[in-house]
Amino acid sequence: MARTPTDANTEQAILNLFLTYARRQFHISQSGSIPSGSSGGTSAAQATFTPSTIEQDAVYADSIDMFVTLPITLTVPAGGSCIVSPYAPYSSLQTKFVVGGASRFDYLAGTVHYLDEITSYSFYDPAMSYPNSYGAISGGWDNGSSQASPGWYPNNDGSGAFQPGATISNTGTASTNISGTIQFRVRVRLRRRRPNLWGCVPLGDPQNVPQLFVQLGALVGTDPVNNLFTKASAGVSASLSVEASVLAVFPNLGIDVLPAGVPVPEPLMQMAYAVNYNGSTPITTAGTIIPVSFKTDMLYDKIFLCLQNNQQAQAADYFGLWLTNKQGSARWAFDAANNSYQNLFSNYHEVYKRYFPVGCLINDMYSGRDPEFPGTTPTKAALSPNSEYAAIEGVPPAPLMTEAFRIPSGTTLTSPKLGIFELGVQSAAY
Image (cartoon, rainbow, N blue to C red; front, side, top):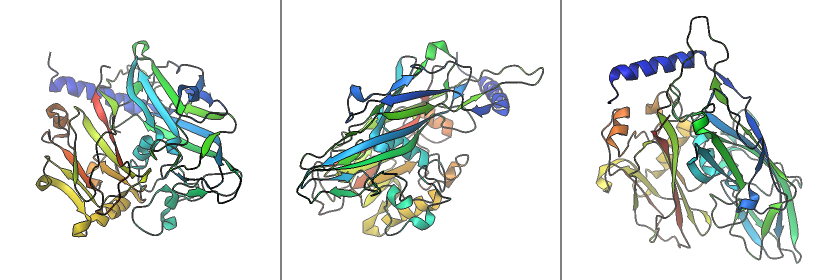
């Protein structure tokens, strides 16, 4: 039977009643540990949680906060070197969330959740330990988190050697160890719309019992999105010097006490949080615009494009959203050839009051300065290739929606890669 406008109004009234009395709580948590000596990237580096399952309660989890402590020893042989990922430390952790036996998203680097969080607020950096980072930014447009929040990575050797984007070298004749304890927080934002519960997870439904899996990503590797150290030479290695800890807290919405005569509301979720990852788009030629089409049946919130070349973040010089697969249909485009590309980063900064890591291109379709008013975002699009999802936003479907980018001409390409993260919501069964 088709869902009628009357049904929708009734559901919204129930939802409004719930949100009127619901309060945010933090009583559900799990403590986890990752074994000492782990170098990450395998099942042996998976966190063991206590309790092993998430508490069942009549509440709706709207996010997952993970407070992570990683005691790391980096071994740099004589003549060796490596580069700290510009997405550090978030690139060191991988998470997977399963509901009712099905994965909401497969193992994803904390990088994507970090990018999701900082593009959901203005003037915000989860690593800041002082009122703001505006005055700390210097030099250039396409900068990373190290420019916005220097010194937040507390290393016990006092060197600050694990600074995002830093090059670590050993010019001596003997191997050396650099030790540091990295502490950070990663938030998985399940709730995708503030006026409703899209993306939230009911923790009291025995048919949809959720499970959180966390593991240490390979500390040394070739992908700055998924590894802490890249472009390693001469046998550089890294491992946990002692056991690492992960505290997972599930902020949730629930009702403890209702006024007399008010029924307990049971709001429908309607939409589930979804993340898609695509790392197979080939980059074969510098100086050529490369289109990437998006055809997933979902309502898109954000799309992140993370460019890399020679195991390092790679800046583009063109970025655009096309309504079809042709450049002439661009909804918006920023092009260095037309002296407009830097406007992309000044628009980002105007909205978010911060810059983003090198090579990270963002299409934010909903969040930003005021998530209740999506028109304030720099690259407002509100597109979906699916007609039903597009109708929810009141826009025409865009079955050929395409993003495009270009690596500058003359760039020497060495195993170039594009990581694409699509964030949004899809119809839920609960």
